[in-house]
Image (cartoon, rainbow, N blue to C red; front, side, top):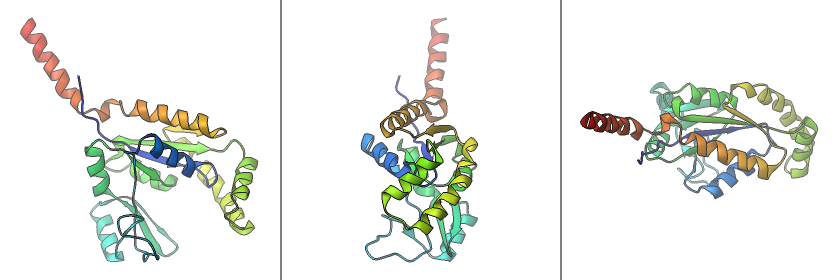
Length: 214
């Protein structure tokens, strides 16, 4: 029996420095058909950015219109600009059996989970092994100054405090082990009954066959 699979909305959240970006890249290497969600934004495109690649660049009026029409799975206002996840391309992807990966915070995760596509979400939160290790990772990256690291650390506890709202929570103390756990979770969730629309028709066929043989 072969059933057509619906795609998943895979939500990956964590405080900055917990390994989310690295693990997201590893998931794409494992299965290149997993797509990164492309957000829409009202901020202007920066040099080198292309519409539909880094972001969908839209006007504020268009963005608000999409929100009003429930065309955004999640959205937020950040530093004077709007950001959000358009529903249409995600709907198309999952209807064709392709998974879409979201790198968003807990607020965006809740919005997507409560959206019309919520039945097809898989939310995973990554915890650091310790707060001290989280700080060490941020400092060792060499990407931020001391003030920025302090802000990231301050925000990290707010993120961590919402861990209980996720389907799965993993402590990322070993990248390879966490990667293996993520693959197992995704592989199993792909077989969830809600992701297998062909099952209903198959059961009907079994019923018809059973009645013919009775």
